[in-house]
Image (cartoon, rainbow, N blue to C red; front, side, top):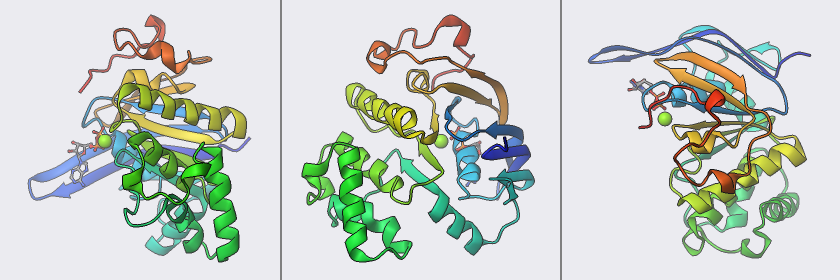
Length: 255
Ligand code: ADP
Ligand code: MG
């Protein structure tokens, strides 16, 4: 089967006044539809750069990126934006919701950009809010919602266009550990029950343990890549002491 994503020797060099920074130094990675992948690594290892390349937010400076078999490495800005809006959903650490808009309006936003008519937008938004357990909060604005609820709204928004992939950069970074565990449960449920492909970036091994596959990045390269089997329930991982079984624990320093 053709992989959903195939990266071949991807490089990313940032040019700065202080000199060049090689953030990705030859990353090759295949991701199949239906996977739940955690990309883990210390701060500065290149995780966000990798996620931004995967999410078509940033272009690699070398290598080849095949998305659904199509070479997207050299697509122009408009073509990338179009592909991104139709195929990808993003969840960020800071939720990134519009503060003056209701939960339903926030979820509708990608549908608005996609040209979906108003009535359809609203019913789809309510369906998505129901999916994440927030049907009773549709008319609330972000400041009337808890952090965990705001992140659920952001997840609903990310799913609005039925993306091939949900990409999440430190999605529990602004949440307390029990709320973070709830969000991870939600992602696992979406993966298991809806077959949603998820790529999650984190520096936290306890968070990464929610995924089925663990890719460790170190100094812009993939240091390890393995399947974790059926992950343990999130509640059991609350203690940070030994979040992964010893054989699945890569050498990553916490940041
Ligand atoms: P992580 O998400 O793992 O913390 P990043 O992908 O953000 O790591 O960064 C990887 C490396 O690239 C770091 O050395 C960082 O300083 C550098 N970097 C990231 N973004 C930029 C940028 N826009 N300009 C210059 N350097 C950058
Ligand atoms: Mg980062």
